[in-house]
Amino acid sequence: RLAEIHGLVRGRLKLAAVTTAEYFVPDLLGSFAAAHPGVDIELAIENRDRVVGRLAQGQDELVVMMMPPDNLPLERLEFQTNPLVVIAPSSHPKAHLPIRLNDLAQERWLMREPGSGTRMATEQHFQQQGFVPSVAMSLGSNEAIKHAVAAGLGIAVLSRLAVCPPLWPVVATSAGEPGPADPLTMLQVEGFPLNRHWYVVWRNDLPLSAAARHFLHYLQSGS
Ligand code: PGA
Image (cartoon, rainbow, N blue to C red; front, top):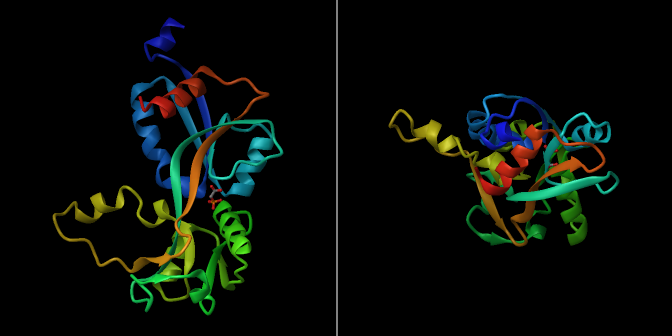
């Protein structure tokens, strides 16, 4: 107990995160690891379906995801917003204009692979709106989608974190030079951004290690 209070907790912290969380979870781990040098951290990154499979088998103690499943005994802590935006090439004729989803009915849409939470959230929203997209292609990562959109293959819904990762401006300006012109833009579509959230979830029927409890506390208090 005393060791824990003084930040000397030891052990292994097994985490998993959905692919879209890879843009910020390592950042969060940075300061946690610095404050808890005795904790060995293992982070798995998979899409939503695979992360849910790992949760079902109790493979990880804590999981960062946007859409926790209903069919497992879970606790959850909401800790950050996750706006989902529509991205298009910067040269798109509707860039900077307020538009509706139906104005994009003729577009070719690029979707994440089946099993992705981003795809699930996008499909749920389209269904609620009665919008039937013409899906040109499925791609297996956020980066592949960004490159395909930049190459003019279509438009897509992605987490804003994937579009403007927190580290990107630092990297682009580190040499004191202006960054390259951004090939992507966020369209101003009515109903967007979709206001989703990040949760950390854990099995309430399995014990949590001291390291996991400390990580939860760190997420809640920011220290
Ligand atoms: P994914 O992540 O699209 O990488 O699966 C989104 C989520 O499920 O939170």
